[in-house]
Amino acid sequence: MSLYSNLPKKNKNELKRDGKTLRKTFAVDDRLYEKLQYLINNVYNTSINKLVNIAIENLVETENISIYEVGYKENNFIRSYLINENLINDLEKLRKKYGISSYRLVNIAIRNALKDEGIDV
Figure 1 (tube, rainbow, N blue to C red):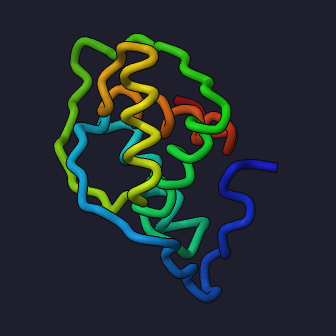
Figure 2 (cartoon, one colour; figure 1 turned 90 degrees about the vertical axis):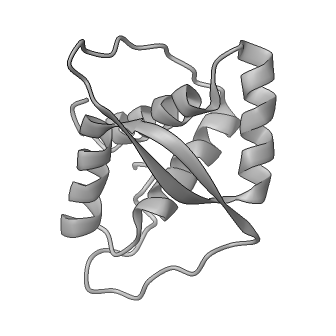
């Protein structure tokens, strides 16, 4: 069962947001973002914001922080996301604990979630 398995599939009702959200800007690896887009366009009836929130929540719970090498020609595009306020606070705690930037933690969270989904990253 993947992290995203409880999300509604395409052609089902959209999930509602939980709690207060804040707009945060992160540079996300383009190849990770493209795979999130694939999921929302073809598999789940949700938003990239929801997928990112679930990924961050899982990272906070598991602290499964696996550093990975980014390719030389990998592009990072800066995008804004609506992130639950409590997750922003939790990301800050992880940032201080591990000395890894918030944007890198978000990329690790997304990568972990995609791997859990069975998507090659």
